[in-house]
Length: 310
Image: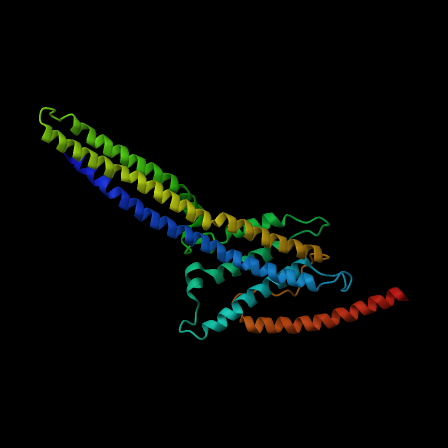
């Protein structure tokens, strides 16, 4: 009797359980996608600034003494300070002076700062060659090891959650079929107790059996429905597609900077990246430094031309 009661409870609660699992799975899928999307957002901004920089450059117009490390560091810092400058100004108008809700929940600013630091740390040890180094491997390793972007809410590992959510559509179908077979197995023994001489009792047994079978088959219907819906959500919010785009954008931007550079010298007076520095102050200092450097490069280039002419 206890087994029968448990079986009935299982069949009745299975559609509700699958519905709850579907809601949790869909929510986690969207959160995983949004976490990776925040990372891809920084890559897109970095690509935009590198593309703008390359459009302004003209071959042979500047002296050939550009360090890949220095150029990459400046572009990464410029991207970081500019993308968060507007956000910081907007936050000053709110009650929360520390960080926005997306930064607090998804650790966006902390993740971008970690990314800039780790990339800079690896680029300074590259040996200068005529061939493009393995920047793709460096980019993938940096994004994979970022503690702020490989975990949802900074707690749950993205890779494990993504694997679990990916197999849920198949599990819904299996669970629905299992519920149907359990309902059929439960109803079949009742048919053995039918008395064909008593038509009223036989009809009651058959009606009850058909009702239980129809309810049990609803488990398969719910399982297939949840499977189709979650498959649609998985395809629509695909973190794998965003991750590939993110890696391609960042790696291709580094490739462009490598092609523009002439060496990979590490300046002895180079200042470390400071993510806590005020963005407006950092951008103002960089603007002044660029103007001074532009004038210095122009004078050096003019002197080189004079020497070649003479």
